[in-house]
Image (cartoon, rainbow, N blue to C red; front, side, top):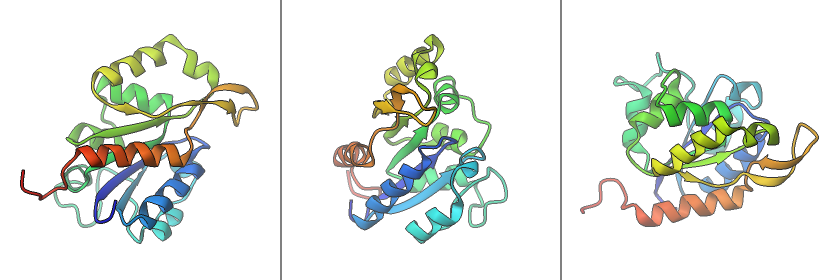
Length: 188
């Protein structure tokens, strides 16, 4: 992890609080972490949390991002070695599966050429929908790495599959992808 560059995207789900623990773990292991928050994510967790954990500006918009003359989606894609989206909502999975780019994170995912780890989280009824499962199948065919979801107590006060994987499991998936990916700038 030490010296590696990661991008963590956060979408709008209550599991976003777990992503703060993941980001903290990644930073403590020596990784440089840039965080992208969707508008919906900002309803669950604030940029200040991730700025304090990473020591870096949090990215929220496609336009007017300071220091990104080419656009944050290009700069972050060029810098990052692994992109992780946690939580990855049903909405985000659909965008990624269909190539829809209507915000910074969905635009970034299309620009990103390295490994992408997705940690789905949603209500169990949503997870079971055929449309969500079709999107998941497409993402797997497109070489996205999915971690979870897990079965357990959900914020909707139901028991079922839809709970975001534990930060340790997501961390392990990121580490595995980094092992397979030479550091950016390393001679091939």
